[in-house]
Length: 608
Image (cartoon, rainbow, N blue to C red; front, side, top):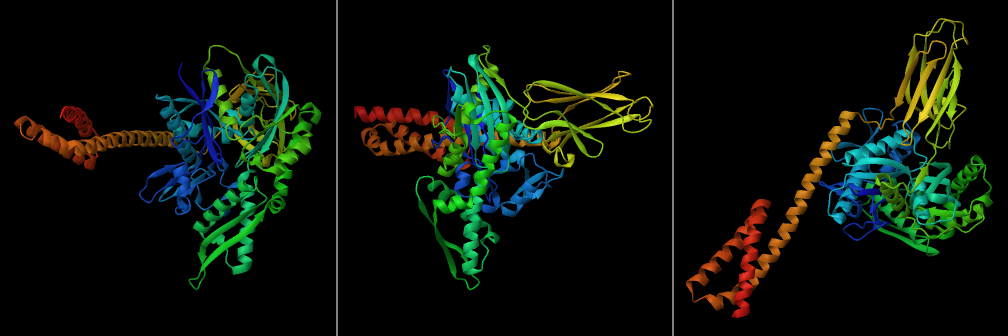
């Protein structure tokens, strides 16, 4: 059976897993780490760096190293979240040609799905190296509160990375699949997922016979560890400005150093009560005097700085339980997911709200990828041992007169589903109606919601307003594809649309990005193959040259021996030239001859 991987494309770190011998396992990268930083850097020479290697050079190459791209994916340039990122990022964020977001690295503008695809491609390479075979299919997770445009942008990223994304599933749902894997007893659980960039809360019923039913979900796609880091950075910048009258935010390298120090301090304070932040030579003053930043941060100060962020997550939990018509006592288990849930204050607040100690039986950084791998295996398996019933994270409806949002499918409706509603014309002798399909949770003002698509039903009979009845039907399938149909109930005239969310990229742009990504993979695989062969050739050369003096002594008297020595020296010389030329074809041929020469030399030495 073809291997399908599960990928947790995270804001801070990403993780890839597979179902192996009936159990989900996380695949480590070449460095042995189970997670890989979701960071991409472009060097001065134009070389792409992804993961740990990108993170290591982020301070010296701050302007050309991207982190937290997931917070920007699928967003419009005009959104407040993008404005926030533009003001606080060490890399340059610019407006794209379709009112989308682009990231300028060196002299090129990259779309956010393109940057995310580089991280996904790295996940794919990690999986292929581990499995020893190509991988083309994946299940990718997204925050439950992502809208359709953000989901489509994630699909585009997968496609650019050369992956057939067979399903996009919600991160808390994936975590629940992993938590419920091999557990037999039915339970109602809450998954509290606070990661690097996003927050989700989902309530699920895990039933018998592998049924996972999402009851309610909510969240905030711009609330996570990045915001906790930002509070520490603000605290450090404000203190430094008071002391030296210099704003460290104006220096990109200083800003990246602050970010690294803030993240490190935050993580340390989950285990200790106080930590030292020490950044020597952070900036130079106008008199060319090097200034240093040194401050102590304790846990209680951090908790004060971030108190409202923690409270926001609790408020969302409270609202979600109300929406699900659930009492706290009906939630039997609370599962913590995401790196931020290691913070003692968060654990305490979650325990206080749900009135029970959270479950510590899952790995917060790995559980989402493990769940994605379980879902991936289930989708390609002949045996249907698991049923996943998810919900719509946002309400779906249409724009009506007076800029009102008329909801047809409420938030937290189980999918697949079909809902309809009858509307009437709003003007006398109206012969056409425009159906504007929207997604969002603002009932007061339709402007606050996302427009997913529009179409026009024409040819209506002329009649006084209110006398032509139009039935609008919304349908969502298991893959989350939305179809909308408008029908004149008297004449049977109808018009429909399959709503295709937009990532901000055209199909031509996506195709060009796919081609670029494929070229990169060919080049990368070729350079990796050359490096392996080069190392083998160097090793053989060293061995042959080490044995050469001994062999010369033993066979120097015979013509055959001298000829063998000359040939050995020649082949080692040719191999060195091929390495310099990076000629992989020649080097492969020389490897075979060098292997034979080394075997012969070892035989001579053993006999002699």
